[in-house]
Length: 361
Image (cartoon, rainbow, N blue to C red):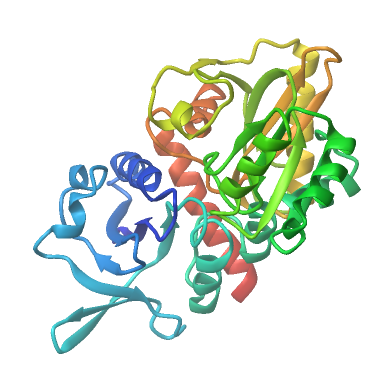
């Protein structure tokens, strides 16, 4: 029986490029090779697509880009191609693929843009569809929809770059509503890129300017003192999703920023999270509800705060292509729930086929 050809796409024109390289390395190393043939496609920070036939160990350190046998390649949006087009000098060849696993984080990978290309091509792909990816990527849109659905969150507000030209007016509104300290985030970014904490008006101005380097819309959130709890979710839209045992992150820094996630290596984890059995069940229930409200299919990691003073469970954000590194919580939590990494990948790919068959049968 012929193996299923799975194209793993990594890198990307994103501030989370390096994280993607780490995630893709782990995914490729754990794909069951008795069932799948792996085709590696990398995207440089400048957005150049390359077919990469080299060893997986060169991916995580970025040396894959200079591999001698790399050639330009793209996924064809033409549904009759059902694969990639590779360019060798003046010639081009096509190669069929059966399914795509986009191991891409942040902009141009997790925000619905590349999912639109997959939808045009009618090639099955792992993860959320165009609209759910786009909605979950935009924290202001996510917060609005979850608020409407009655899911508790930290008090929040947002402003566009144009509105922020009158910083004093925005600061007056936001500080009155939320009080200091305030967390400031780009509306569209991941891995805590561009996120900072402001304790006063001057720091808020600096935080806004930092967030605006990643997006034209800024989200403000009341600072929460509490445990940071995460839940991995998997499943088809419209069906009861699988939720993992919730885990707890104890950041090495003041909050779980990019350095604490991927650089220092000093953050600690507790699986299960150190909360009551009742709260563990409530986190799983709320994660499943949020997953459904946002129209997710495939996977998402959903992050929460459990507030120290009140014990309230507050949803923080959804990640539709969470980290898949060897130390990432999504696969760790699923493994703790009884789904080991290779089986997890197999299930995600199987769901990609199921969704596509439903759309195009």
